[in-house]
Image (cartoon, rainbow, N blue to C red):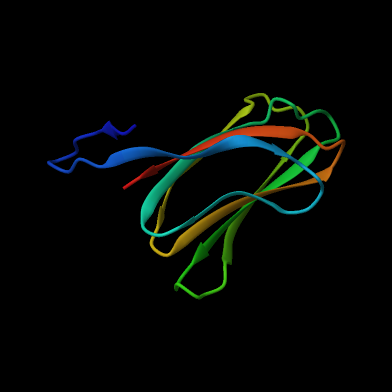
Length: 119
């Protein structure tokens, strides 16, 4: 399924990319890894977080087909979230983009997510 959106004569296609539930285990775990050209966005549910929980979301990009992943940002979330849905703003990928989650404190939780790609 794709949703046509017409912006100044350009009609990108928005397609499902990935969805599921990640069960944290204390290691850095991949939420999404996409290789190629696209604009990636998505959502993740943080409603299971409790007082004493901390997660880190990390963002990586590739500059060449055989290149290493380079970290360009990370965000930390702790405790109960007032707004439990995390929105991943659209990020453009030329060679690749990867987003990971690591729960560093608290009893390991599960996190539902879904991602879309615009091509």
